[in-house]
Amino acid sequence: MQFSLPKGGNGAGAPPPGTEETAGALGKGLQFSSALGLLFTFLAYVVPIFGGWLADTKLGRYKTILVGTLIAGIAHIIMILGALPSVLQAGHGIAPFLVSFFILAFGAGMFKPNVLPTVVDQYAHQREYTKVLKSGEKVLVDPEATVQRIVLWFYGFINIGAFFAIATTYAEKRIGYWLAFLLPGIVYLALPVILLGLYKKIVKKPPVGSELTYVFKIIFTAVKRNKGNVFAQNFWDKARPAHLSQDGISVPWNDRLVKDVGRTLSACMVFLYFPIYNINDGGIASVLTSQGSTLTTKGAPNDLLSNFNPLTIIVAIPILSHVVYPTLRRFKIRFGRIRRITFGFALASISGAIGAIVQWRVYKTSPCGYYATDCDVGTGVSPLSIWVQLPNVMLGALSECFCNVTSYELAYARSPPNMKAFVMALCLFSTALSSALDEDEFMTYEEEEEVERRKSIDTQEDIEKKTDVPETIPEIPNDGNGAREAREDLKA
Image (cartoon, rainbow, N blue to C red; front, side):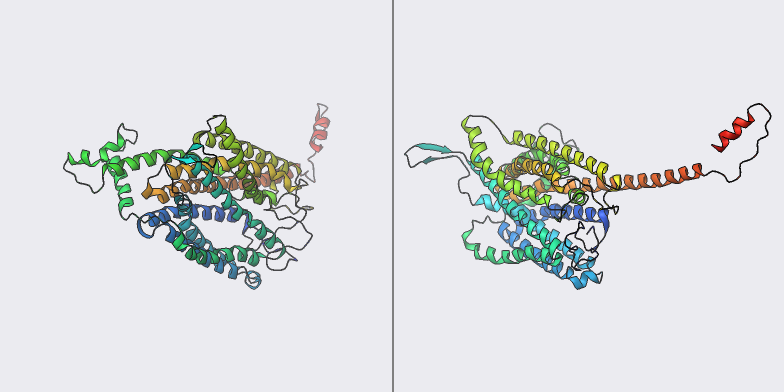
């Protein structure tokens, strides 16, 4: 989105071989590309609220996953057609791209909140039980530790899929965008067939009908009867049927559902910290990729380093699952969910600081200084290697292993059976909030940069005006009282 078709390229988005140019097609600039990237993320994490509700009340999780992958596959077909060289060279690539963009966001939102609950549902033992080992020793199996390991590996496999993007990165750099979109398109189009083949072998939880709809009514009733005071003591008691019946009000829900709603929303409070964390993880919008375009790449794609995020996670997950966490449990060191999230936040903070230092060095070493993004002086890039982004990317990835994994674990463990997809959607919604904040922060940054640019131009013009020496200097009579010195000062 950011860069135009490279001059001398193959017309499909790939730059000339052996140059420092970046792959591009639409040429809409940094602000447009970042805004659209944020919008996609926002939609892909807002739509899950609808996807979670639809799964828990109407279709069931498995069918909703099937529908979502089919929609995403259709989006990729449109995306591939819009990225054909003839379409891009004619300047008609933006329309099909935007259409596929919104369809893909909707499809992703349909399956995102339902995949993890479906995976964990395959684990039959949701309570502690005794297991006899081959040695004859009896051990107590902790379901919380098992669910933790399942969620860890789930996140690891997600990132195996994300690491597949390295193929698309090189495809756009060497061949063109049509191939970069075709590769994931093949996967998406194959998924509905695979899911249909597994349909009878998967444990599927049926939808609960209108019960989830009562959740919103319970929340509204509790807020209304507490007069908007969400911090009131015994807040949820005001929505219990027994309490409402005293005022002659009959409701279709029961005390158990009211208790479930209160417990679930209390657990969801921790998700409110994640928008700030998500902003810090990798920087605002597509700034990491943009920063990469200002560094010396030696022919590597400018978004290459972002692929080390999933690679780091793929390596870290087995170590955490089979070495770190078992060792902590063996020595009875408590490293609970909140401590894991806190530790992840600390790693993300260090990662963000490193990214800021790298950006400062880019400004200091770029031929264009603080206007490094669109620099066309000399090579147009800083002599710093793109590999200086690696610590930022890897620390951010490690933080996800502690923060995101634990938040998914909380979303499943603390939600009632009939609300798991919906609560997972609320967990994912924190990413949508961070995208909204990203958009505001990024637009503010762009506006400030434009103001500074204009100030620089105005200042330069003022300097030029002030340094213009008049062609004729008025004569100052020599009156013997310092007039000669005044004339020399004026000339100077």
